[in-house]
Image (cartoon, rainbow, N blue to C red; front, side):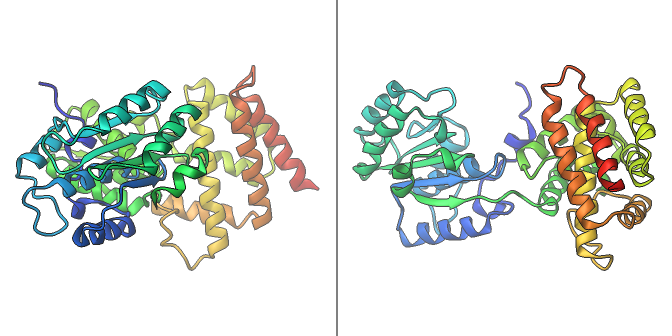
Length: 373
């Protein structure tokens, strides 16, 4: 039997294991304790923030046979069925691939029947914003007059695409993007469980490149453990391993490039860009790393030299941070904002350019032209 990927292997089985989203967990705990369970919930937020995980925990808690507090016992037959993915009364629908009226009609027909084993039938509709207009209207009718044994949990990453009438019939919970320290905490815990040594700088790199998604971070860690071949061995995973395995751009390349911008050397900056492309650097990854570094520089500039503990400005060595400080001194805050805007526009144009680096080259020229003015 194949090993489970990390995000499934270490998916929280109780509310106390949830990282972040404390405001949501506390509200759900109160609802479970008081017995005030709603018939419909709407979980909105970025991918990898825990929407489906908390939806399953809620389904498990309301159906737990031996629950003493708000936590599911994880020992009764109901909890075990949900943990092992065989609960007949927990129906999960991926609206990205089952978005039509026929699927919703089938769901409505299934709702009429009482649960086969558990107290509630729980329907989790993932990516619910992708339902067609007809399917959404059919679901709306069900939400207006739901049977007492049914609970709906709609999850979406794009709340603005949901029809207002569905939103108004649900209890809405807005999930936030996880912070770097929160992600590092979970990755450190997983590494301990897997008996793998990994340095803090390596965990920071994974967290910084996960874009606030715990699932992505766990996927990166899984990739690192798989390709390094050192799972369970007495060897420490270092930041260099992460950079090589995940194809991350070296920070010194970005800092050298920014040096040319500081020195107003447009031709040297363009030549440097083409050299690193010829040497095999991924242009998209380089641009992403450049934008992230300029963002860190802008935040440092805005916060002032006294604020060195900002979580946004993490993942840098002492020497790299000192260089960021020196480079920040070369720019005004307004200049950094303008530079960031130009490079963001260039990144969006790169996908459609016949010469991928051309938008970035034009942005370099535009940046230095505006500085000269």
